[in-house]
Length: 369
Image (tube, rainbow, N blue to C red; front, side, top):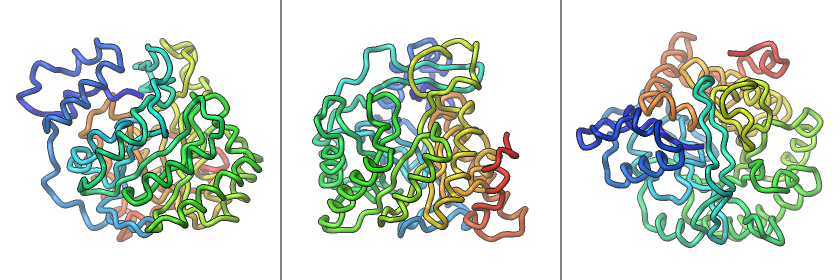
């Protein structure tokens, strides 16, 4: 996924020649690089007001000013977590990072589906590796919850061992860790979601966490393409461990919602608005299986209404990325204002009270946006 809506995101006279139209004429990855560079130069606006009290939540022991996070994939190398937090995100998740630097798949590898508000990517965990991310994060103060999304090198002989290395490396720096086994762009990675493989993975990851100086919360990020039998198996494994939570979901390999559109036939994972209904149904189906286990809902959030729906389907917090490509960062503020308004309109006092109120309808496929 490539973040290319720079002009609505960065409102500064220094960027007057770097317009959204110019970025959209670039290939998506070049536009993303320009955005990262601008953020590193301090050209992003900072939120100057306090988030409404209705949005403050506790998540796995973390105190969040608001429940809206930047999803993994944007800041792969931990270059701009602080500027992102200063924009108003309640959490910022960097990565995916792998033990060794990895070039990823050949370019081009990210494609906009403008007609549908979607993005297809086959990045392939391109990143500079653990050492580079660690060096940037060490001693850095981030005014939001900092998540580190850990993965495995494509050519690793033991994927599980790579995740263990990620825990050992970042447990003392991160506010939470995400075990990403759901990217469709590393061959064989999604197999780690299967019963016995997942059991081994979580046992070893959580054993490594137990040896760390602090008990960092660990989330597991799963795919939206799992059927209900697979979700049953994941729930059984997860509930037998002390995993802290789930992130539902990653990108999809399905193309039903974008069939016939430009770039729809590209290989990779589809994100953005076309993913919303599928990922939200899987969120609700997962919620019904895991009880009160915390879930971060991600996938296709594109408006205040869709953010509210994620909570109603069972999310405790949410993450954005692809919709910002088309809507700009002001979407973040609109979503937060919309969540606070929904809390008040329903006579509640906190956004957490919205969670799960429509879970049965979403799980059964009776709700959609």
